[in-house]
Image (cartoon, rainbow, N blue to C red; front, side, top):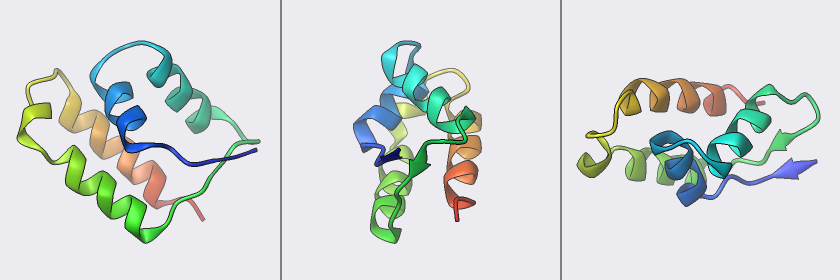
Amino acid sequence: MKVILDTNVLVSALISAGNPSLVLEKVIESDTIQVCLSTLIFEEYLEVLARPKFQKFPSFIENTALVLHFLKTIP
């Protein structure tokens, strides 16, 4: 299955537990889900996730770094 992670879903997954975080976990853990990612989408992730308003959430910076690293290493 091919998916594109909407930026809002990614942000929601990183700031709270709920369906978006379950989706992100499934994407990361699955061997059958392929994330479709362009340079423009990745740049949007970087820009949005760097916004100061998200820094107040616990572990946001660390979790963001892990998720971006995972996404960047997708072939």
